[in-house]
Length: 195
Image 1 (cartoon, rainbow, N blue to C red):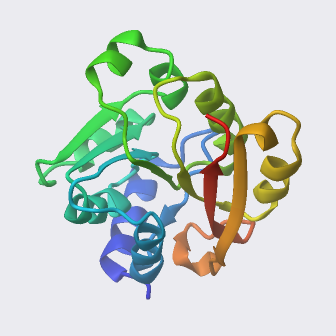
Image 2: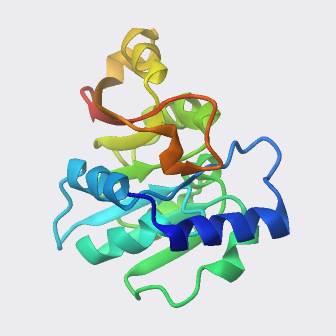
């Protein structure tokens, strides 16, 4: 079900700021899909969660209701002024996840999460997974919103298939996003099979 408040906030942000070049930004504005994404991750109140691509915090806020701590990573600093009045168990980090997975200070002071959740630009999925392969900080599972075509890439690509097994959980109606993406997004569970 489309949350009209989330849609209004996403429209306002894009009207004021425009879309960031090269980031393929789409906002998940459907409460039922957000709920399903979190349910698939099987988050418990004692869990730490890493969210990649926090955006306006639509998923972040819901994660905070379920988890002990949420580390919300966002590369686009334009979101900073919109991410206030959030629960105290959220830590926003404005940086590129590629940099953070190599940042010894961040990795040393940040306990690894139980699960990684992301609605990131689709073009970044493969690169992020390769960075998780190279990082010893996190060796667990991931739940991504991405086109179903990424499943074949993960399960058949020479390097990725050694470390991950991707499974389609559910296709998502593109109208659950704003702006509507050109592809059909899906909830994808990515299991780590070789730490």
